[in-house]
View 1 (cartoon, rainbow over the protein chains, first blue to last red):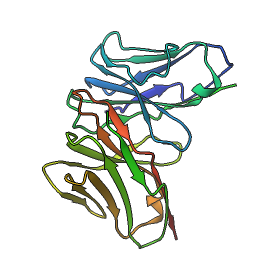
View 2: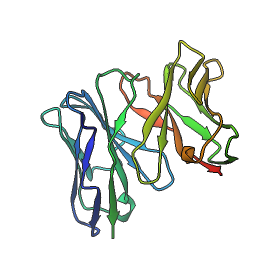
View 3: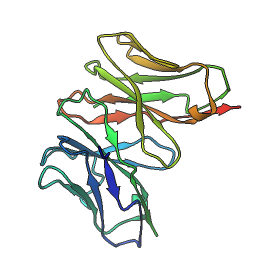
View 4: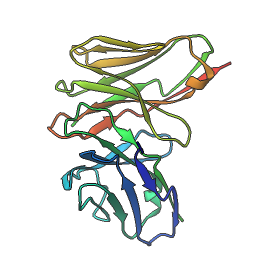
Length: 115
Length: 113
């Protein structure tokens, strides 16, 4: 079946603009994660959903970052009033259950560049 | 929360030699340790994982060892090939009940033909 799909693959925005990044997890996957990956670094946790419930958002850098998964499938990460430091690759991952002892299935990411 | 340290940050080996990457973690309750491979511009992909009830797991040229007492685990790649060149990440879950996975900083492996 299809893997985790993210769109757009690349996004260029001017500082101060709002952006929305989309993640389509593998069908039926309960858990969905968002990560921020800066150049040359490992993925940094942003937020976690179990179905439609956002159970952990402790990694969101500021109140400009907002994520939702209203129907427990597709998720959107929104960044308001973007800043240059928001430039990074944003990765989405999903896994089938709610246990943390499972491999994560990653999307290809959205490379966000803020000018 | 979990603190994961990974080293070395870069590693160059000759084709056919072995490569070893090490990670330490801080939360003694962690019990699942995956390794991911990320090629340039691509998604991280799981290559091997280990659970805390075993000390070693092997899959062809790749093996992972776990020492729960010392809280460290290692990735071993034998008979390295040029296609093994990539960035490798270890990870450990946050044991606070949810799946907040903490990743290491990554090791850039270069296999020289």
